[in-house]
Image (tube, rainbow, N blue to C red):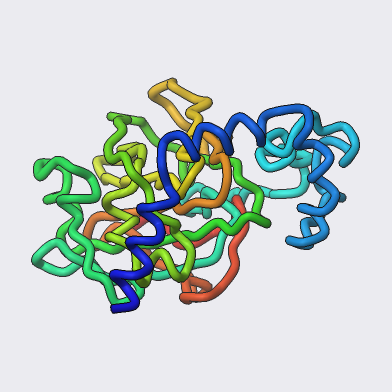
Length: 259
């Protein structure tokens, strides 16, 4: 019953007109007056931001802020796979032989997540990592490793929240929300990085369309909280001990090492 009530409430409020109005407001000069209270509410550390708080022209400008260069050092090991975002590790584990994985009690299909079966088959028996970005987090997305980008494509439309309630009661937000799939290849090993949009402001801006990514390079950003999913093939990554659900990670922090 809780799930049905939650889904109905979201569907009644999350309309294209609502999303457009919210997006228009957050990008307007008027919204800059909300920045101080937004920063205080979410206890955002602005000392590492590239601009002073009064220099932001809108709430959107503040939300998509860039950081000072030393703020997120990128692990220098040639084998490391680093976190592409500042986030909480929501879930991490093995993709079943049926191509499924569990997040907050909901079963997800890799087929549905990446849309194409020819791609999903590569990750059977591999591993998945769900990284959740709260409104307080830095929302720029960076390359998790140096690799060739073989494909990038979008899928999905209507979006549920990707917070705890959304993951528990929403209609499979990870695999059904608007999302952009980036397929990476390194030494004949495949990795998928899926950027998942959130409720109301479904914005994922790609900043890098080149076919070569360098580890730590800024490649995209989210407008308002969202999620990144990493999929890796079987026996391709030796994960570090910090890969624990509930733990916070930052851009450039090593999550594992490519085998």
